[in-house]
Length: 483
Image (tube, rainbow, N blue to C red):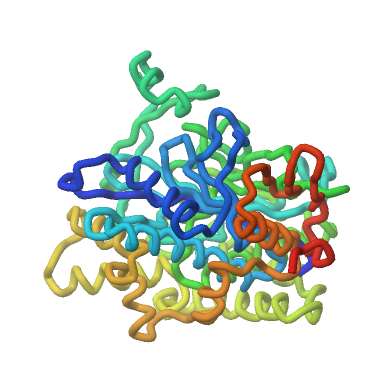
């Protein structure tokens, strides 16, 4: 696919009280171990952002990715290298999870601390982001009018991309302004905050497709702390190049199932192709994206009815068939496009016949099936707290504790990348983007024990007078890479 894309994932950390330190200490120890002991990357010597990414909070890795501790929430965050292949992206993201978990294990903290690649804290009400980034045309038409054609897809994509969730949340905006003590204790949490809410359990729902649907408030927002949106405009150099810019999607949640992950990214790339080329019918506009997002997530009948702007209704599966039909013009372009089109259509058909038949492909189905089996065994009933624990452990990064990994080991989870691809991606960047050059340059600086450098996505500064430009994300800059 002739598009650059990548994913940022925030990892939750849960610790035993007997550990004697807060989770922040564990998060910092893991980050330091990766950079200083494993020497998998170069730590930032200068701040990238004084508030959110200060000096020494993390840095770029030899696999082209970036790992750092986000100042908002003090959580570990991993940003994949720039990718042009859906399968490269899946491997690179899974590699990041391996890197974090391996560091925790080598520090011998894995008995008392756990990292999770999930989207929600059931009891505290916090959410953990999994953000997608796509290189798109920097046109007013696309960044304004055409987003209306993207919203119907984004809010219904959860029928196959949803991570699944036990229970629900109600957001409470009454009397939730932060007091001065809250702001003083965690000042970065409240920078540019204009809307603060509390969270209460919602006993009216037993299971949802999406983990974060209850927490999305806007279609577009620039200030996203307590104001979470589907799209967050980003005007910086992360992906911007010539007549393109970065589309930053906030709503996604991390998939454990490789098939669901690949289909999520592949279908989104094709929808962006369709929209950029004006191939979508004008009637595909949704009446209320945020309400639809929640309704689809909470629909126990799996009919998934969507109300359009023109007053008509359509099933979400049929809505996606409209996107599939419009994308047929790209059939035969490359193997990944054909894989996406074929599996997208087959998945929609299976969802109409029997969603539970997709337990080896989709996270929400696998999780719901697992929980229902637990209930049927007489070990719990809907509403019991133990079901939240099952939900959480599905996302544990530790293969010894992960309920998803148990499905993998028993042949109940379909893979799209091999174990070797994931292991290689822990140290090897994609070969067909600028991440290749950046990863090699990071390794070269590490090997030379150089202490003056500054690294960004689009450049590597070796010293004050020597900068290597990496502005073209499609170029691997193999000619300047150290041997």
